[in-house]
Length: 466
Image (tube, rainbow, N blue to C red):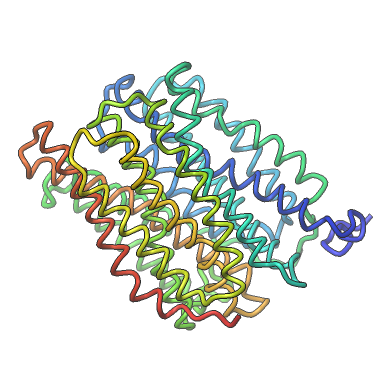
């Protein structure tokens, strides 16, 4: 029996797109859940392994960096192996790494396993947007993207909420088995619903380009991490920075000469795609940076337990899901530029509100400002998807989906890293006391507000063809 999209649609009938969307949402939610649930466990891991923030942040940035690199393998893997085999391989490796994390006894082991998990997540996630664009061809694409965004945008909030409760009762290991049931469900559903056709003529993977990209990402992130503890003139700081810069130049040079590059630079010939990339960078910083900063702030400054810190984020997930659903509906009716600008300004207002608060603010007030920010993020994802991909040809969709998700995750990886660097810098500059740490968190929220407000200039240049 045929296993391509037309055959599957004929077999499962008119409701096949909805069933497929459900499987894609579950798989993506599991990946995003794993990326953010670790944040509420960081204080417990730091205490258990006697490490500080510069090393602990690798549990977040290592995952995001590997995920960013894995995104560039997604288009090749889907063409070479097919969507079904790609998803099965990624999910099985993810499950194995999660189980191994339960017996880890050193911080470097956890970081290494998080990097493997991130690579799996990067390979799996872009499949969703490509299949949504191919299946929903008779209308309703914006609504489908909104529903997909409902899962992808709610998961970063539900991760800390559920993970915080589990950490309080079972320890930090709980965040590693938290995504496993969803992974198993996606694995079983994908066996029936995902297409398995593949293009056997797909060129071999450019291993050298991928290696250069990985070296560049981790070396540059490593330089920023070391700069949190040592002066810039120290070889352990500028050395990785130099290696990362040279590797990045080598990657761009090889990509520019390749007929089948991992990162298709020709996509950026579209002005709208270039502007959407700036928005994607900022969205990644806001989505992952705020999910990293808020639980850390609540536990470090406000003295919340992991469970209570996660509980504060629970209403924000509900509102973000509603906003994402509304954003998908509106993206079929309003311009992407208007929706993106609105989402950016709403999040900027939220970050400024959190920066304005003094230590000791009530649970309700903190939750209110966090909710405002999630509404802004919920509006951004559907508009970013339609605004960036609608301008591309059908042949460029898979590459464009991978590229824009790559840029968003790049913003998340470097956003968390830069926010940690800024936080440590301001903490030391303000005197290194408990009060100085509270001030450093406030200034970090103000920094996010400024970045989001400035990105509105790029958002106005994202012009959808719809």
